[in-house]
Image (cartoon, rainbow, N blue to C red):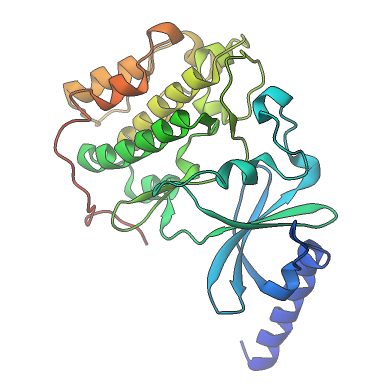
Length: 302
């Protein structure tokens, strides 16, 4: 590509990006176009897309562009009186401070979009990591699973539910450290049972599959069980909704797991919500408490 072609491509990108930022301002009146230059697309989510952005000092960030008409309308109880003028995703992230959870930097608003500025996360999604490696060895899966479960414990401790735990929403760097991302479905914890479900069908619990009223906290536990299974097996434990409701996990041929791990998966993928392991039981289980490998040098990232 010669200089002219590169310049033409840059101008085309700038024209496309102007749709998102031309009239975008922060709550205190700062203009997005004066502070950040938006760039290439980094990924897509259920409620928008993420693009690279660079500020006036050359620092790089991620910008999640959220279409206003696609934001979930949570109830007053779930927002706990939060202002409706900002997306709940930003309000929640703005109150969180944990190493393994995505950090929010700023927010802007245009006519059709919210622009949520976040830290630029290094690494690749856990989904891609599993796909590149087929599955993860137990030692590596244990370290990643412990970090994810610890992050969920922190969230529940401050009254927040992520609501969409899955491999695509977990970033992993080459040191095996994770970041939990995409809080577009997150809400504040409440004791209200609901039929509304906004996560992935693959990670839905039996009570969700049966369209019963369910507890979001216990659904989140189930999703951790599915995540663990996917990491060590390279495939989902259930292939159909009927299997989720009444079937047993399908272990692929050639996968040999330790007895402690099999017992943990069984306890977390318990069909009865009341009998399902809680976070304390998960974190104190024999498999989780084994020695950890924190540097997965033998994993394929590229």
